[in-house]
Image 1: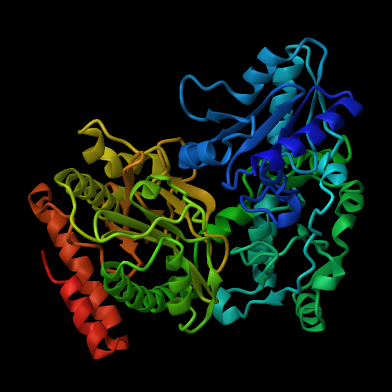
Image 2 (image 1 turned 90 degrees about the vertical axis):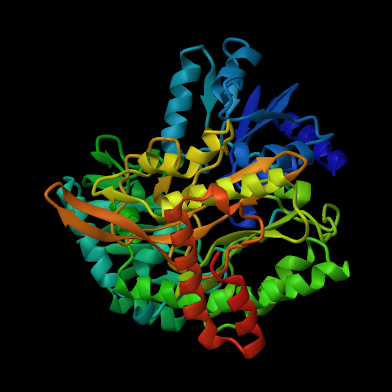
Length: 592
């Protein structure tokens, strides 16, 4: 693979010379700034061989580098080997920013290229400001992959479908009216949206243009005067066309978004971190732009009663599938005939037997032993380890159902463990329970709760570098905002109806990884003289392995939460299991 990457980079450098560029920045994104782009825009993966969801490649005429976060440090090091691309670990004090590195590598007056059609406007303006200050010029007009990627996949043309209101809980017409209200409060007349999941949520449509993400490639313009969905006409069936018309939505050709944006005459609201530089600059000079977090994103994150009920129903079915999977795993490992790569298929097999199943919500992470320490490990036939009856197996998986999205991680003792493994596991469990049992005042941000997940680890000089929690879409992207739980500051407060993951972990390189993840719903807890207080309701229903727990490390309250959670799991799942499955679950959920 490294030889192929080297050839591609050589072609890329010829492009740089032809265009009189001295460096080029290749982000992971598409024209919709998606975390997971359609294959047509998977340019960063194509040029580097790195398959992680987050990362930026910078290529100069002599050097190349990849910047990525802690989730991918080990994976990137493996996949970049022999490519000539240097790994830069974001978030570490010694790691230079991309701008700092370019300033150190390039001479005054030299040119840095970006494709303005896949680069966030906010990031582009920041880049231009920093590089111009050092007499470096930013050229935004080129897509090098249009000429050097000869077998590039087409932009998807898959048909979309309307998601019934029994699942969404609100009509598209109602959502559009609420969005218009919010936009007008900001002194704007319209909202310009490029984010695929926000468009899917707003119009109650779903598609399959991006693997594991039920979205469709499109743009949207929303206003009282007219609301337009810009999408390839091949994607619209007659049924969908009739549905959109009834909701007051006009359908236009996908590429016409730029012609339309160039004629905008009234103040427009957009999010500069979610609109590309090219689209932002298409809006006529002099038109007032209200650059702010999209009100539609916040609305999408706050689930209504139908969506919450859908999540609840999906979790029960997912839990049944997971019981079947864990029983299979327990029987299969001692026989010595399974590897990591067998696990994703088994999960799909059991989940696909459940009502309303659509597909996976992301590629399953199944890491045994040292591979479990790779946070977003991507198993392949070449990397797959046999799962031996000893140590830890980490399985992070999820499913898309018409009525909800699931995301769960379990770390399973597949055999004898060391005392250090048990201690590490119990510390992670303490952090998980710390989030699950949190009670916090209205207005609390995720960063204010993050310490609850890390306290036991920090007390022992340990840490994990990824976030503790991310938002979850409703039959949408498994990662969504605007809320999260992490060390980094995020001004978005946790609000009633938000669904967020709870997933502390610990990773010992080349040894093992531990992560315990459930999904939690923000709910009202109590009202006192000091105001409203919220708490989390755990939605995920699946036993947490008891074998690695050192009970003496847990407090009485932590033991009570654990036992009560397991009682809930048994009570909700057992009526749907056969006798053998029921007996297995009873043993796995007995009190500690």
